[in-house]
Image (cartoon, rainbow, N blue to C red):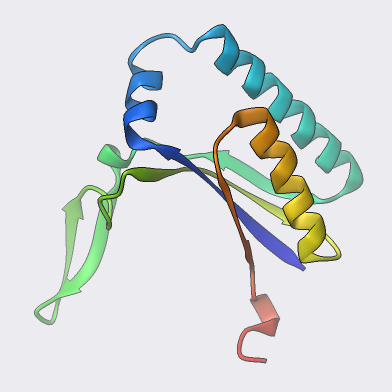
Length: 123
């Protein structure tokens, strides 16, 4: 089954992180994350992984008063923002949580694990 690993970060921390050159600690964390990705690619568990643009450059498209409109910015204003995602395919949710725990250890930010329903949706 596929699992979506959603990486969150405090908005204020992301603003600070993108304002200057990444710190040595941040570069070391990213290097560790890349090692985890390489290992998951080798085992066949990594489907995809991407970092996301800052929420201020997002666009929300929604229905308002019967019309579909696009507005600048994220759908929800939160203290924490979605910063990255990865899709892994593994045999159990426990394995997905185990993978997420390694990423949390490397990056220090929380990861939300959600099953991707695919053909199981509605079952």
